[in-house]
Image (cartoon, rainbow, N blue to C red; front, side, top):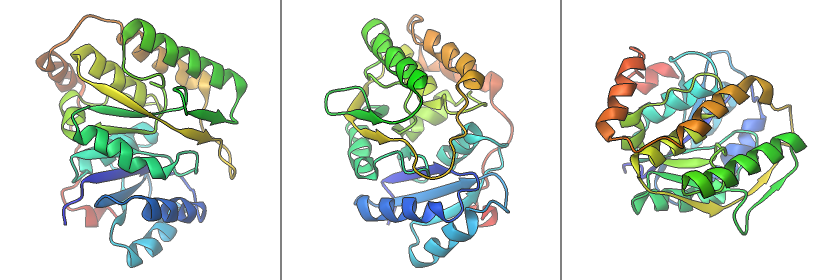
Length: 259
């Protein structure tokens, strides 16, 4: 059966902690799905545990990111490798609610190109996390919705579903971190394509330490924040922009070779 949704999970030495994440996703996702555990190196501690689960459930595959290290490249690789028309990006740290993957995917099925899990709409909530990061994210989301009309109160959240054809057309230029969510939301806004949201409750990770460094990633976030306010663009203009910066490397067509 062809998958209707590809779940992309970038990982970095999650070890046994990934088991709980994958078990929850496999339990909660009802749509025909493939789950790509995207790692940067064969010796990543996540890989043995992902392969154990893959042996009993063929929906799971551990795939080696060949685009370069870091979460942005892992997400870009995963979406390019996706077999489904919808890709949902979620983290391996347990912060996101897998029960909403189906809802996000169905919004894309209905015609939106970006469906956001929103912490800041009615019914949503953010539990834990650094105070300044929470304040900055909430302010960015509200101002983008009110002033740039981006269609979501939570443009910075990484937990989103995307029309894979849309992503492949406009490309992902982010290279440093988790700003892909705001980049693709901003591009959809400039194209005047629909963006929607569903409420989510985000929980700060309970195990391990976050590798999110706001000081390091802030310039990239600001770049895409201001990009959202520009004039309308055509699909050809964004495609031409992507063609200028697009790397030559593409994911292997035989993902078994990337395990």
